[in-house]
Amino acid sequence: MIDISAKFPTRRTAVAEARVTISAATAARVKENDLPKKDPLIVARWAGIQAAKKTSELLPACHQVPLDHVDVRCELDADGSCITITADVKAEYKTGVEMEAMTAAAVAALTIYDMLKPVDETLVISEVRLVSKTGGINARAFPARPEEPYRAAVVIVSDSVSRGTREDKSGAAAVEILTTMGFSVDTTETVSDDPEQISLVLQALSKQPFALIVTTGGTGLGPRDSTDRIVRGLIEREATGIAEWIRAYGRKRTPNAILSNGVAGIRDNTLILTLPGSTAGVRESLEALRPTLLHALAMMRGEGH
Image (cartoon, rainbow, N blue to C red; front, top):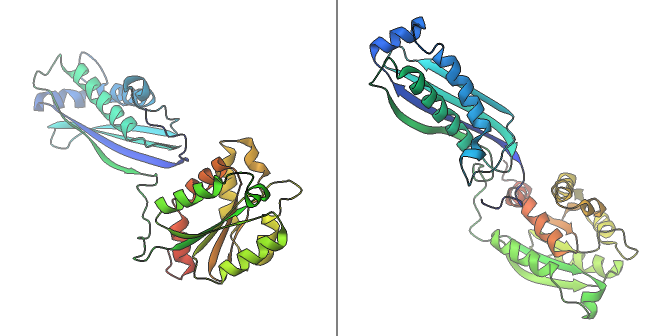
């Protein structure tokens, strides 16, 4: 199975379709329910619903998905040449539900085949196909990356790193992830947890043409942690939703996420993000923002939605 542990739930939908070709004589018998195995369309509907919930047991590499909605419709076409099955599946989860929808449609088609085969030797399951799906990062429309990459700076706030007694890892992680997101990270600074040093560095950087400044460290409850308080005093406009989303994303991975007082906000048309000092915290925070960070910067420049 693919590792989806780092992904976050989004609303997922999928619609799949299957068709069973039948003879005209069989169509007439289906309409009258004149069959050895009664109510094939009703039975097939419930078989499809049950199959959707069992998909992960049938397909070895398929994740178990807690489904919020399954509907299966089995309808005889107007000309009586086939039965069309439509499966509609919804869930709020980390991965899509297209396999659940196609499994529902396929099993419903097999059920119809099984129930009609005593009276029709011409039956054909003609297709099982995905009609549509929504949800997830890949399905969303994002603003195109600008021709000139957004510039970003990373500030490591740490007494021990600034003294050279500990190797920086969180700042390096921030640079790595921001680069994969399309940023040009050409500046890194290391400062101690001294409030005055933090303030001076951030003020200086925000006067330069950086679209984004990311700090790592100093957002916890320790006696020297002050990054969040300094940034609150510097920003002109707070982006509360960004910080809330980072904590919401993190608390599903570690209860320690609630101990972070990280903030986000705008100063001089630069977005400042204060991230935890741990490498995992930095990685998870930036991954949480991957779907929306470029969009946020585009909005700040008046490019709209």
